[in-house]
Length: 178
Image 1 (tube, one colour):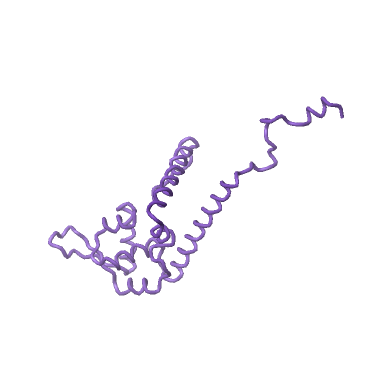
Image 2 (cartoon, helix red, strand yellow):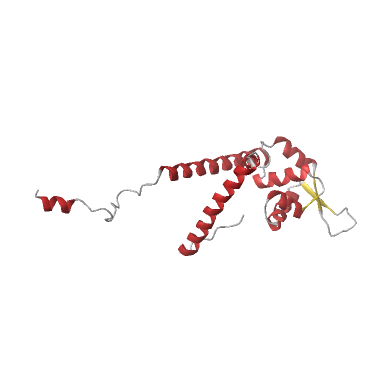
């Protein structure tokens, strides 16, 4: 092969990539993805164990545990303690009431205020539930030093902002605020 033929067979830098090979990811990117997968799998596994042992979802167990720890709590305070929308907390309460695990009561002078109390069945569900009751991720996060949480939140906010931008430009389903 002459020099010019050899030069033509070698792609110059920046030429179109070989489409038969997947794009290379930086080792740091791969490590972050693996860590997210471990977190997601662990959360799913814990929620599955909760459902097996208690017959309720992980978020229902968390809500129930808050009611057990704070009998008489109001829905808005339950929502705040779980960092969810009040409508989400109301839906959880409705499900738990239907299952007989908590009860609603209007015991204050202002009859508009609904307070939540565990039933005996609710306390039994808590007794047989796997720990941590709030879920594995909230439990681990609550044990991190505040300074480290600030750093983690800053980085996660950056990821969420980038994902929202990508969602809008790609016309995918927008990120949900669960």
